[in-house]
Image (cartoon, chains in turn blue, orange):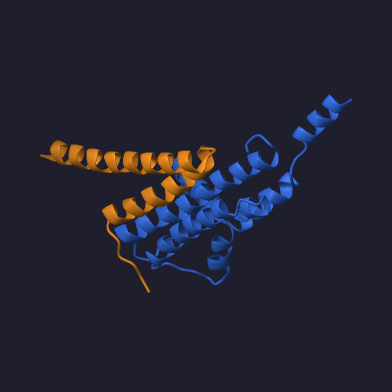
Length: 139
Length: 60
């Protein structure tokens, strides 16, 4: 009986995985913060938000979920949109305030758009890490 | 306010942020995280300079 209890406790999530995923997506690092990993939460927050901020300051355009003419363009647009969206509140914030980069494309704004997508992808890594800590797959 | 960073500066930023997050999510102890973060940053730099020089030699 004690062995069963120990096994059940070990498999039991620390927090609701859905809550952790939702918070980790909305506010980068919030999942780790909720799990008591405050140092890691701060570093994740700073990395994701600064990466996004640099992208916006370089006037990087956001990807739109609109299809291009060919499959590759659609893949790039939708993939980029998911990457942007994964950054959480920075993306929602700039979308809410109607962030609009200049119409004329430049190499600087192109680099900026990559930094914005990278911020979202880094946040996905952080979300997965928080999920694994919640479900006790990691310390 | 607008930033006009060039390709190298943007790559440095990307390497820095990516290395921090990769170090955090990959390893278990603080010591391992710092080492892995530095290792990732070094790999980014090696790729940046290596591919940069390769392209320069390729173009002549």
